[in-house]
Length: 524
Image (cartoon, rainbow, N blue to C red; front, side):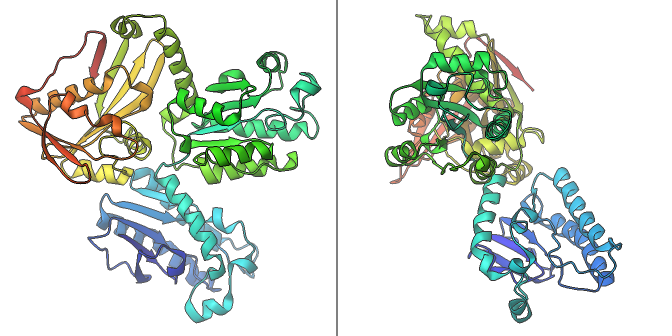
């Protein structure tokens, strides 16, 4: 249950199952609430003196609420002045109070992982003051934001919550001709496609800058184009004004096959779901093909004129790729997938699996979940589907609360001679010895790392004095590969139900703690 602290009528802007405080009332902090929202708005007052004093009181009220809610998630909206009408143009006391409040909640967010700030200005800047306020309805119901915007707001708010939950698409697939550059490579030639300079080249240059930033922010970039690969290679070799180089793409499909088949191939190579992909192509026929044959793939419209490419970039960010905070793993995503491709190439040279695994020189670093890694831990619970025994979705606040109520958590980082995959696994264990969460990124599967991770955690639990553990398996349409994970590691079935949920049990005296000699284990 979500509980909202407010100073105005906002019910129609929020989901139907939310509960609300009285106006400007922080006396009730429900114990049963799982998370909280603070959505105060700048009061509709023209008396700047009283207004400033009221705004200045908000931050202390938030601190009181925060002390009462503990580690539960707390979403706080920034203040935005939608009704400024100061007579004295040099009097900035109103603005300073608002800015002071916003700085205060930014600081609280830095200090408390459960506090997430939503910038209300991202919503309000889309509308004029006349559109934002319906004075008649405000006078009748104390609703400062025009109720006609409630649908728009709910859509915007849902996207912000997805970003807070670290949920977003993973991969952006791009066509080339008239998509990444202006012109058709096979007809115009390498030297005549438009990438920079005056318009329209200037538009494609800015577009590529944006795409490059997406790559830096953890979005996997791929190419799917009907072209000759030799011609595309020549573009990368000869066009210095091409911002996106070959190494910026995790995978490339440049051929004359149909694009649906190529996208399936890309998903298989990257080991990600089609529903985590976005396809951008200037050709409406190609877009319709993907919408029909691969409905799980998101396919936005493409602008008819290059000068609208910045709008497309902004749409991609807001609709598919915005995230509340980035992890180190996000920032190195493309390089990690390129390294995986190298691993696959090397694996084909070996006939003996153990020889291949030994050649990788794998180092597994296992550490307790910390303030520095809790964001990545939460992100993995939101995004990992295939090797995830329970598929429980947690926010940072949820994990923080789990750890502060007796639970334990560990992450695993995987590195080898090709590079560092970063944090790629998570285990959460309750104080009763129930493995609440066990998950691994698909990028590191196929080498037995998941078994080693489990054995190390079981060993640590035994050293703590725990006698037995319980493993849970909750089936989903994606995690079927994990159904035998616990039995294959010595656990015995103790309970199952008609939904396929299964409980397993293991006496730690009977656990297998053996680890193959081609792994180097570091525990901290």
